Image 1 (cartoon, rainbow, N blue to C red):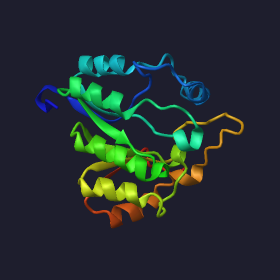
Image 2: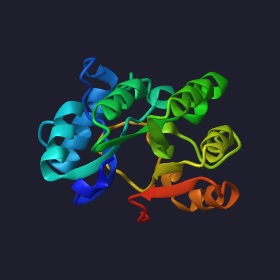
Image 3: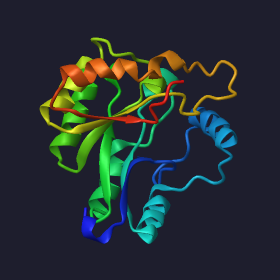
Length: 199
């Protein structure tokens, strides 16, 4: 990232719309509810978001949210975001989304993304991935800690699932106090807590 050309860096940029695949119908319900909650208009594609940040001279860290296990939606691939970061390395950094539920195969895929060198950190979303700081998540933490990379954890309400009857998203997973133990145990992983007010 060419920071001398930038006035700021946004470390929390969601990939909203893929340039390679249609919006998943399962995710669309959540997206529509969030748009109503946030009074948001049209969501930008990845390339539109990059163009917008470039025009503002703001760098960005972009990631997807891998909630396939809990919500059953098809996510935007980590690889698409990594490719966008590779093509726009002057302004963009990619973080890989790791779902602790994906087990050893998921960790192999995450390691390959981190070995590629384009992903400079990881994203975890306890509410959308339905995990607390438990032993099931520790292999993912250990991987990020091994690479001495930052991890962004979503916490608090975050707006996703608001107004959906039976949306299934539980606020208990996103209490930031659970992340304190992670930070204490994995000292080589820089912890970034997104919107950490409670509740």
